[in-house]
Amino acid sequence: MVILRRVDKKRFKDLTYPHLEFLFNVAMKYSGNRYDAEDLVQETMYSAYTRFAQLRNDKSCRAWLFTILRNHFLKERRQFLRRPYLDDGTSYLNYFKDEKSSGFVDRIIEKDANRKLHKVLAGIPEKFQSPLILYYMDEMTYQEIAEYLDIPIGTVMSRLARGKQYLKKGLLRLSAGKKGIGKIIHLSGLRK
Image (cartoon, rainbow, N blue to C red; front, side):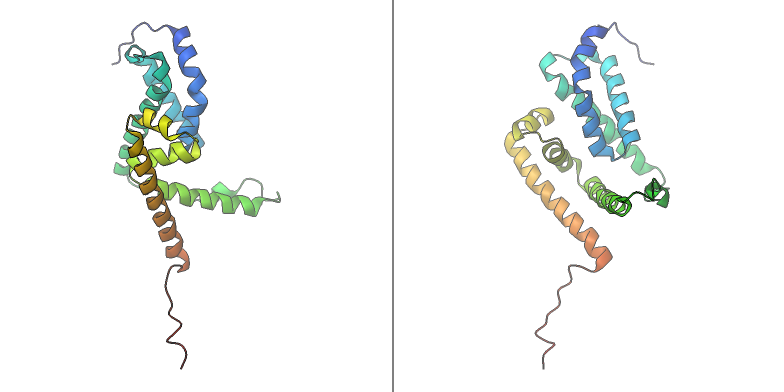
């Protein structure tokens, strides 16, 4: 049972609410699903409220909230990996929204590309995944990422470089497995 201490609700609201959009965007990048992202932000805000006395510096509130969100995500991911695998979300029902709209095929292609990207991102180790998401999807600078993750800026740069390599290899492996791309054919032996 969690014992709630008295929390200055106005101070909590003033410090945390400006970061809700940022938290939701990060949660969307992590989960790839609006409903899971909303749950993740809600759990983050609940944890922040119950542990608000632990916030030492008001200026580091955004980084503190990000750390809570990331820890919740990692905890849920570990629990998810232990559960039996029932559905990967690629059901045909995901594509049935409005068949008559002109961009239906484009939406299917875009959803497929996003699904592939999220699948590859999920397979990348978390220490490389977080800097990638923060840099490319939330457009943070190296310095901001270093502060949020509490690591040196050189480590951020090296993790981004290695993360990009993981991402590239994963996307190539995924596309090569389906289309046969990536096989080398030597044409010199064909001519007689």
